[in-house]
Amino acid sequence: MQIHESAEDYLETILILKNKLGMVRSIDIVHELHYSKPSVSVAMKALRKNGYIEMDADGYLSLLPPGQEIAQRIYTRHCTLSLFLEKLGVDPETAAADACKIEHDLSDESFSKIQAFMQNGLFLPQKGSD
Image (cartoon, rainbow, N blue to C red):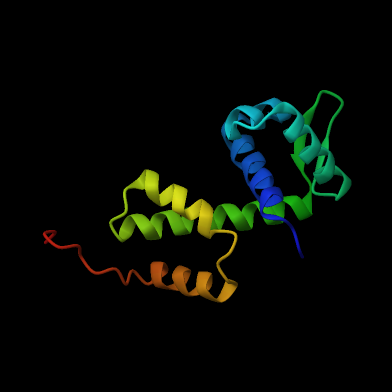
C-alpha cells in the first residue's frame, strides 16, 4: 500500500482529533496543522476519492477501514518513537517533533525491533538515577 507522507499525516490527525473531540471537520484539521483551508480541502477531497475517509452531509469526517488502518499504524509509530526518544533522555517536545520526522521513513524491521526493545524494558538507568 503506497501512500504519501502528507496523506498519512492527515489521516493520523483525523484519528487524533476524533479521539480528542469526538467529531472532526476540515476546519479542525486547519487549526491543528496550521494549514490553509484550501490545502486541507484539496487533501480531504483526495482522501475521499481514494477511499480513506468519508464526509457526511454536515461536513463531519470519518475514517474508512483503509484510512483507519493507516492512521492507527502511523499513530502507533509516533507514540512508540516519542516514548523511545524520551527514554533516551530527549525532552518530550523534541521527542514528539523528531518522531514525526521518523515515523514515515523507518522500515518495518527497524520499528519492530524498537517495539520489542521497548516491550522488554531493556533501557539502562540514566546517569545519576539510582
